[in-house]
Image (tube, rainbow, N blue to C red; front, side, top):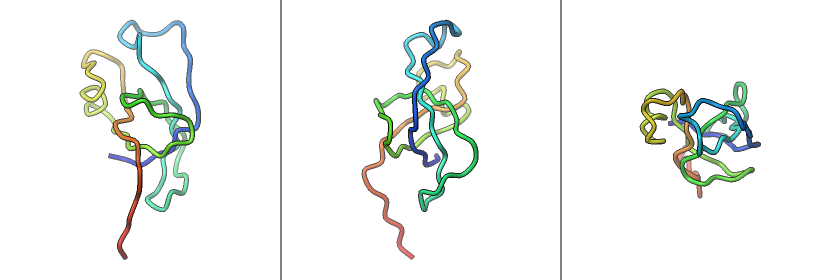
Length: 89
């Protein structure tokens, strides 16, 4: 699992039929210190996340399982909304 922040949405009226009904969110990957890392990704939202929220997302087969769409071209999915992060040094 990975940490990210939802920074936008994607609307695609024409898409693979297996993606119909899926909410697509632009997610910025973050380090555990909540610093941006890498390029933003588009993830299927399975939990009702909103713009500005910290989220947990998964990639690959775990994303298709989370979205319950095994035959879909899904590579990443948001699976949790973060309430709090505590790191004990």
